[in-house]
Image (tube, rainbow, N blue to C red; front, side, top):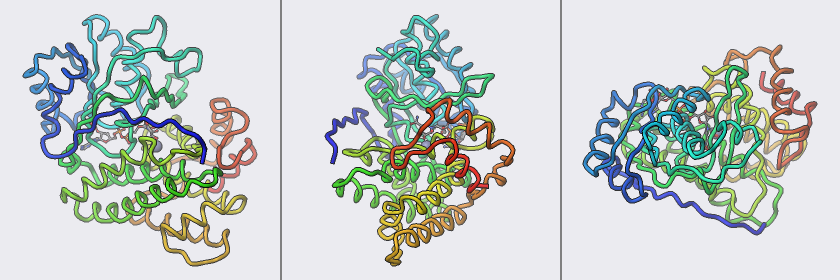
Length: 390
Ligand code: NZQ
Ligand code: ZN
């Protein structure tokens, strides 16, 4: 096990009526005037936005609003949000939505106190020294941004999608999570979230670090829960407890607990980000349903140990040969993805073979000539993995 320092400072208020704590939580974290960020309208339709605004009002918190965040969020709305905050002396951001809304809120929070263009941080030209506090009212369990120090933004018009992790500044101060508000998720978005949270665990699980049994077992337990509850949520979308288990799994998958004491990988995420950068209509989770099994298939041929362990412990595979066991596990994983309505190939996502060279080039420009923590890959191998996903 590697030495580690772990802090998950976000205060989670989980369950019935959690959203009513927005005002008191904002006040507790020193906010007096906030920007409320939300997406394309689901939070308005469910009535959640109204409840949050009333709660802020009741606690004497002034607010302005910025709606219209689109999935796979872009820099332009971040810039607009930064301007709004500066004009209105805002000292906190409240995100009402999912990963795209929360990531936009985090980027605005980092940009407001910075004397330059916020993209400098995502481009690696500057490091975040301070950010406004961010609070979250979560509506979709998926990206895990409510507990992560990451923000993923796409620069236009280049369509360069970059994930930045700055734990101390970008982890939300609080997150309000009422599973009831996830009942309205369309089945496809629910499934995308399931794939994404599983991927957040796999990116940490596939590790060469030995002696991390406790972290492996935590990861396997959460994976098994997601598979079991994920199957149930597709047939009983209004079951509170099922939604609650999925929602909390999404946070546990990405708040760092499944990565303690080990080297992580993150290649599949980087490879997926190149897909949703060029095809903003592709949901991150759908892209991962295609890429992650392709990456695992390559690993089954080159470094099968962890895939074999996952196949045996999570999917009950009994094959004693590591490569064969890993491949059987991938097949079962694909079957699960298919059963919840996820695509399995790049062509189902509308991605053409002719786009692979551009994706590979952009991937290595963004991430370096050699990528991967579990197994190191050059452009030759990442090209091979994209082809496995066709
Ligand atoms: O915009 P609205 O109308 O709210 O609709 C959204 C959106 O269309 C809808 N939705 C959300 N909650 C709903 C709902 N519809 C009905 N009922 C509800 N309760 O769902 C759609 C997708 O929302 P989005 O926020 O894009 O989903 P997600 O949470 O999957 O976020 C995806 C983004 O997060 C990034 C991804 O790359 C992508 O850009 N990620 C962020 C991470 C992080 N910050 O730690 C890590 C992840 O690996 C990921 O890369
Ligand atoms: Zn993800």
